[in-house]
Image (cartoon, rainbow, N blue to C red; front, side, top):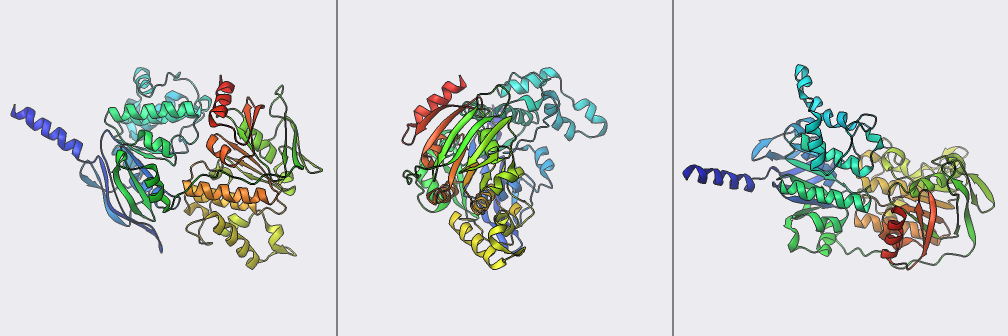
Length: 512
């Protein structure tokens, strides 16, 4: 009886002891203090949401928890034992496992090889040959996240949702104590997101601690047990129980004010400025035809894989189609010719801002003005005063923070990098058409509103806008018209004022 009581007491102590804790964390980069003081405790069998506006210090804290950065001040502990992670590998060896927003599979390796990658990577020398798990064990890991994949399938053949779950299966294989999920549903369809959230429930039930980082407040409310909100480098909310706090309280803690979605937009003009003609992304596909009036915002709605983003990329010149012409007023621009598109006033905000958007090693000023040298130069020389003035105006309107021209783009959070890409395109000399793919993916509610506002300001000046997005609420908020995309073709259209469920129904029909 005494032994049983002692075991029960130890079990209760384990539940009370955080599996990972961060105490009085502070982090400075030179004179810039990214985190002033943050405390965070993660417990077994709970989902802890971590929220914060872009630039609040959230990304820096996550890097510290994962061993990518060492804090200037403060301490970490794993299951009550003080530790200092030397690297991400060291953190993984302690059971702290990252699931990044940008997935880390090897696309040309099989599911089997990807599952084994960490086992082999963590093994040393002669032990590596013993670390290769059996196929039966691997299928068990896949089963725990609801996957029934062939172990011989190449990862590049999987959907984004399947790759996300495969990443979690790799963590299960390493007996992860803590999963750090960074914007896990950002690139998933609604159905894939539901599967992922169900998997999170299973992981919680088996005792895994989960740090859930997302800007989607509906998902946070649905899945989290507690939450912490970071604002200006400190905890605006620290470990609050979800049932005790409202969505409005969360938004106020994140940005310091109410942020309502845009409901009214100015009407567009009647004259057609942009006409898409005979656009085909592959042989035998239905041609895409549509027009955009002066100042009109047209949405392309489609599930992941529908081709909505690829149509947008072809129009912007970033993807070469089989055929197609973009008419800008009386000028024919060949689809798939980016240089030609820019010369004719077509801006482009890509889906992947990291790979195709920001110039990471360049500063804020160079990133903002890179597409507008024609406006700020004379006789081949940049007029620095004018360059500073126009960059300052657009970045102030879009709310870049912290706002310092000397900072490199790599120093900023993802949301602030997105603001840089949007700002650069709005400054294109003679901008006539702005094409955007997932313009507010992974940004906070305030940044979302700021991006929407500057885009609508451009439309009121007569700029045509095409927005490809899987976010239906975004399209309903800022678009005059929404086109439904299925199999790289336009299959339906909705005028402003359409109901959300009608568009969801059209997309569901397209997916069926």
